[in-house]
Length: 321
Image (cartoon, rainbow, N blue to C red):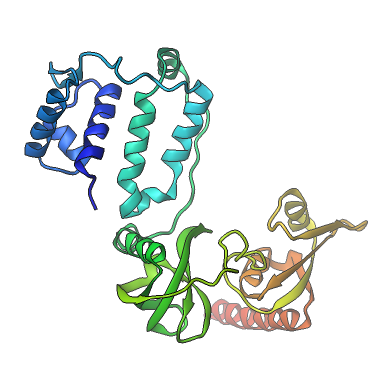
């Protein structure tokens, strides 16, 4: 959905305050409208006594009617980093909103902050790794969010890893960016339980006319507390003994807020955590190879022994060819 005319007029003013040579074509590109709409917008702004003139691009004769916000250079830098690194840029709904906010921030700076910005080196860069398919995120994100706001059920075709394409009717509660992608948590009518769905695995989506009543004890702040990353399961205590380089890596970082790390006298490290389900944490442990030994639960230890035997068999065969 595009900007309203009012929002677009404010956006144009902020663009003109922060940039010096914007013609109608460039303004049309920034605002997502035709050049004819921009010409009408310029007329509307002039009729509202906004002092605009043209000299190798549209310019403001004065911006005294909009006093600058008192952003310090550090505040400006923080906002700029947050806006430029936000994964929301990959969604159709918030891509243009982020651009609007950034234009407003750039426009509402004191002269001292502008002067420092021109000479200050870039000291920090934030890159949030994302595996989101931009095309599908843009296609479905806004519809999921609208259904959450309206408390409206969704008819959905969803591509699962285990079963391929499935149809679900779900009651959506919230969207999160977790790990490397956008997910939404919803109550699945078929499974009679809450499930986590990745936005870019949606293949078809339609809001139904049916509304649902939200359960009060479901919150984005606490929903993933017992999970290793995303998925749920029965609570189980996992204990792993790390040695060598892996022990030093585990001691040096924090991987979960509920973890317990104990340094042993023999150079090993014992890592303990109670987590819902073991599938996700198992993949993390496997990444440390032979320097990670599962102590508990016994079922996970046996699973790793089986994986080891299969890997030995596969690699033995490869070596004989």
